[in-house]
Amino acid sequence: MPDTLEDKLKQQAQNAKRAIETFKKIDFQVDTLANVPDDRYLAGYFTPYTKTITINYPEQYPEAQKLLSTERSLYLQHEEQHRINNKKGISVYDIKISPDQFYKLCAADEISANMAELIYLREEYIKTKDLSLFDKDEKKFEFYKEAVQRGNINPLSSDPKDFNKDMSLIMNGTQKMWLTKYLPNYQQQLRTQTSAYIISNDRQIFAKDDSTFQALMDKTYTLGGVNFNKYNEQNLLENNPIIITEPQRLFRQENLEKTLDGDGKEDWGDVARLMITTSQNEDITDEKSLKNYLKEKNSKGAEYNNYLKNYPLWENETKRTSEILYTNVLDMEKNIIKKPQQSSAESQKNSSSQKSLARLRELRGLTSPDDKTPSSSKPRLLMLETPAVDDKKAAYSQKISLNPFLTKKIADLRELRGFR
Amino acid sequence: MIQENRLIQEMEIKEKIIFLQSFITLIRADGKIDKDEKELIAEFIKSYRITPQYFAEIKNIPHQKTLLASLKEIIPNRHHALFFFKELLTIANIDDELAHEEILFIEAAAEALHIEKEKILQINELILEKKIWLAKAEKIMEYDS
Image (cartoon, rainbow over all chains, first blue to last red; front, side, top):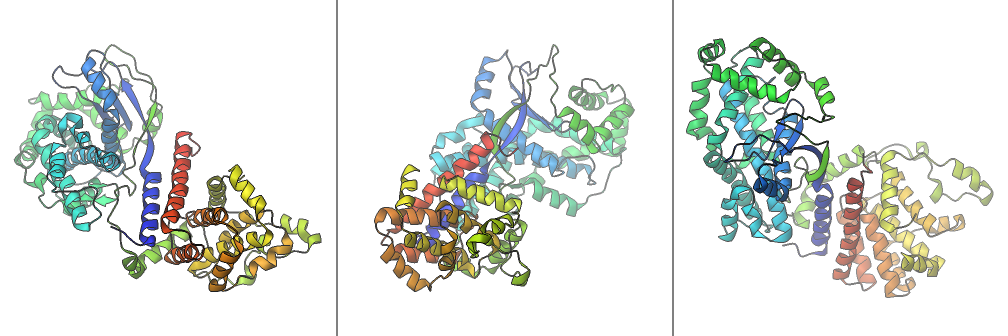
């Protein structure tokens, strides 16, 4: 634990920075007539084509409504992670990796969304010390709660060893939980996604590209400023029998051809159904239009997405969505996970952090300490000069124009001090 | 805030000058003072209503050891001293990073004015809480969009 004044002040500043950067506002819609099966309610989903998040709120299931009200922020955190991953190029169709790598990537996308939920709960736990938080969402994070209870991990510790154990459990524990508990339910979705990937690429089967794949996995598993892929020692995804055999069984090119030519209508139907549910006005009745649809709406869908981001209110017998709603979720693209604190002695030695500070200053439009501009060519700062009283008015009129960063800084200073 | 306005009104010019000299010392603790940082100082000059005739004196900053001794001599009481640290820590927290040299100066000033480290941490926390509050307000009230 830090004990010098410097360590404590720095920790306070770091905590504040985290608190400020923690949340971001996201948009979503609610579907009150969601068509969900009796035994399991789909909490929500992200639609890649429109970049929209929909939370189901089925009127016919009061229990589901209750759950969706209390745990909505958790589901939104999950769906927002899919949106972030999509933005990073995860599970989009214009990448060139083998079908089984694509299949794995889609699975990793789901694991990543679950990790976002766990990180959200972990942050709440750090604030409240309430272990029952981990019972939320079908108790999927019970493994984490038990590890805290047993003392195997300690999210409150600032010891680097504890931090590494914690991060490792978030990665490997979530992966294990998802593969055991959820993969069977997601097999159909992964198959559909991979079919759509192949179709949209004119049924080309790309060779394995380990370098692209690993880079995408790093992106998928980077949340809250931590690359969890570095903690992925167990690599359970690679070794899971379903993950290994399913793509091989399903996506050999001849099978796919056969499927799409009519014998295996089920696969074609699944893909088509998925696409049709995302578009009320598109005419997708055959493979050709589906392929065009996929290409236009996924790879080149910017225009379409811009149109649809206005969330048109859908009303028909199976779906009724709300207008755009907004909420705050943890911003997983920021460094929200608190890392172990360096001691002041260590931080002094760390010259790279000094360089980062200089870079930060440059980025923010402030003069670098290394600025070699001759002082005579620099703008005069009149406030600290001593103009003659008669020259005062003229001097003030020459006042240098402030850059936007500085304007913001001065506004912050005024707000903080409470003076106008 | 009324309290703080009253404190500023109470302050004699020599006290205002030593405040300003300390702020400049803090800002240039990393080796130099740039034009943006001077603008921040200008903010204080404005709010303390210091007239240009004192600018030269402000610029004539004594050596840190002498400055710290003067702080002890000029700042009349604990209330003023606490206000001094609130202002000092506000400047220190404008950037996201607290430099090692800045903290050394704050620590030395606290020692000179007999302000406990715990109190420094409390004041710092107070400022940071306000900073967080303002950032939240910006998001909730959609001032950022």
